[in-house]
Image (cartoon, rainbow, N blue to C red; front, side, top):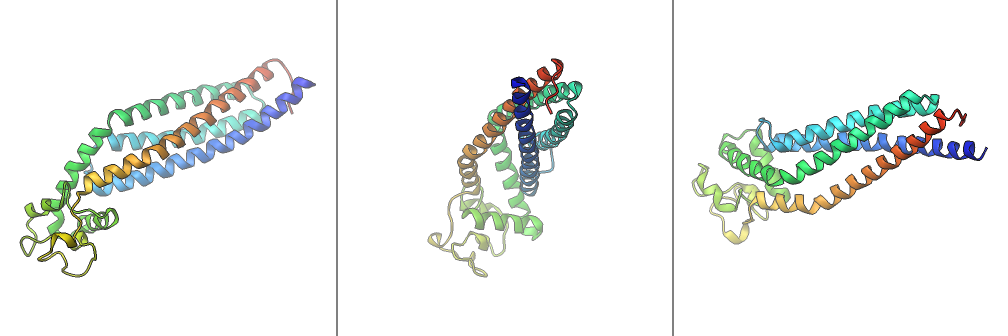
Amino acid sequence: MAVEGGMKCVKILLYVFLLAFCACAVGLIVVGVAAQYVLSQTLSQEATPGSVLLVVIIAVGAFLFLVAIVGCCGACKENNCLMITFVIFLSLIMLVEVAAAIAGYVFRDKVMSEFNKDFRQQMKNYPKQNHTGSILDRMQENFKCCGAANYTDWGNIPLEPKGRVPDSCCINVTQGCGINFKVKDIYTEGCVEKIGVWLRNNVLVVAAAALGIAFVEVLGVAFACCLVKSIRSGYEVM
């Protein structure tokens, strides 16, 4: 009876962790889709290490959700085969997450390099007054920056009248404030570096979330293994 009671607790805890897996899965999908949307607005549509990594994150989130469903069915029916499948797939997901984390660290400079290149390309498209222009304006206003490296980058863009910067570079944005501007009245820092600093500052938050998800997954594997052992031993745990 002691073992049976202990396994009941394990089974209940496994249900709790399965709910946590579902929440983590939804979180990964939402973060991946949101980041993919932001990158698609600023980077080219070609495949880059950053975009590929985000696709992997979305796929892992979707797969984790399905695996959580398998685990829930296995625990509910006390099915040995389903529980073993759950353990194997969850272990594989953990390996993929570790690989994605390593890839993100290795390609971090590559991603910023691609961002810098594409940001400058979008600056060249700015005079066309298309959707790209409004996106760049929003980024410059939100991050309080101007140009890629600094405000002088706009000197190479054929804006009218010549020598102006977009109004979004102004500290106090008003119509035409970028014409005949004074340096003290505009943001002088480049957007690429500013956004890079913002990303680095948020890496700790992402890393903490990743560690939390990994911890939950490790506990999930441990509880699932205990339940598998109990099922194999022939105990009825519920």
